[in-house]
Length: 167
Image (cartoon, rainbow, N blue to C red; front, side, top):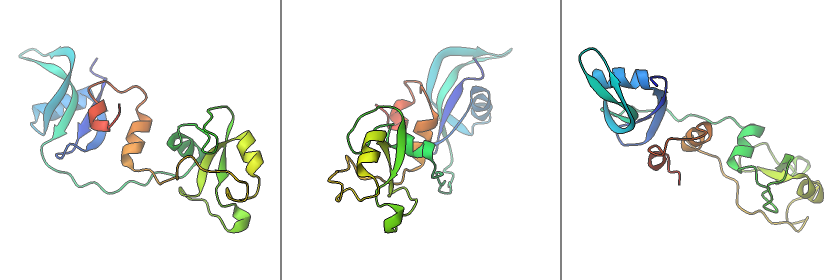
């Protein structure tokens, strides 16, 4: 119970980190954070009891440097939700496709790599989407830190969803 995860928000309610409930209780006791949401469990000590925190907010704004998300196959598949960006299918196996092929001077970047099924990747071959008469479902973009938090949290507690902008 004390090892449950707790979402930590910055003073402006921006997702900051994830910590253990044990750490969150210590921060609450030291008055460094404020309780925003709680689990349906109460933690007891010798002298007192308190609800088990689910979401806490830091009392002071902490400036956080921008964290780069690594450009790799796993993160591209996560960004595109394992959906082919040409036909919209979710078939397996999926590949990574260069929108502008390397032979045309395309690079390895967030804006040039998309998820594609084998059939679409073979159909497009070493051509641009216009040459292959194929259209992208959506333009690829570089994901932010919120994407990173959303992707590492498998099954978030319902109280976390509004703060992570999840449905």
